[in-house]
Length: 446
Image (cartoon, rainbow, N blue to C red; front, side, top):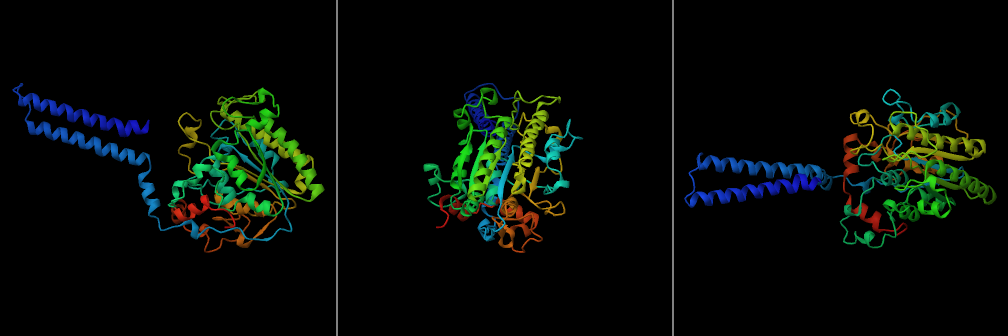
């Protein structure tokens, strides 16, 4: 629609004007009626109209597709490869089980009951109180250029912005499209580190696992078991637990998560092999679907659906607490990205001009009191080393990818996180073709 509206339509109008002008001139030259206005005036007006359409259409089109941003990124002096740090584990003697929960569109701003009908995160807040040792990163930011689920996964598990194969100048950069066997196979991510240190990595999500190549990403980076929409159908989940256009409800996802953590925890106690159970909720993805388990008590259905989803996640947290799993299991809960603001999505009035939209997060580390201070204002790229340290690993300089752990007392001076905000955003926007060529086409260890 954008191409038609700002590219094709102005061109058609321009051509129509030119053809009309051509036939008008022929009519006059063949003895037609004398024009009422001077010919030079008509030619001037026509030229101005044509020029305005061409210039206006071209400018609007270039703005829409981000030509200026692309040129700036292509000419940026910054290169992500110069700041990227391979995680160097210097100790794992304190490693513990890990539960990682991604909240679909889990934006902290939705907890503001002055902007919305109620605090949609209240059930989860009550299950993760600071007084009991739950911590959070204040002003946790979506990285500049992010904003969708796979970008959230890659940034928080690999510590880099997600950029496609087109960022690579390598002649082999299209190989990913040919076989689809790997996803950022040249990059060391969370699952890779955990697998190398004896973890069993499991992922549960309600949506189609192959959507946006999520299954390929997980398989490439150490996850040996994953369950998605087709798996739940094959397992005989009741039809009432599905929405036809997306997947399994959060109520049923968390019920299955209870069974899975029972299984994983029992195995870990027997074998000594720790586990990472990663979950991704679904209900809060717009257009929202009101499942039977959710009672709508707000004028806007979206607010109630968010609250119902958080209630199910809170129930899972309470279950882990009741079973004693929180005594040896770290838990990281966070939104995968800010809430989308596409046409037709809810809350434009409250969020479009909000000054500081942030991502909800909670972190639990067994035995750690409420006095620990986490670095404020960090973005998703620093969550990668934060998760590793929450799981009990010691990292050299607390770095991984472009990130620095929230537990670090200070940021290394040569880190990407030490850059000024403008320079940091330019780094994240840079094409960095060599880095992404190796990230997509390479294999770890080569």
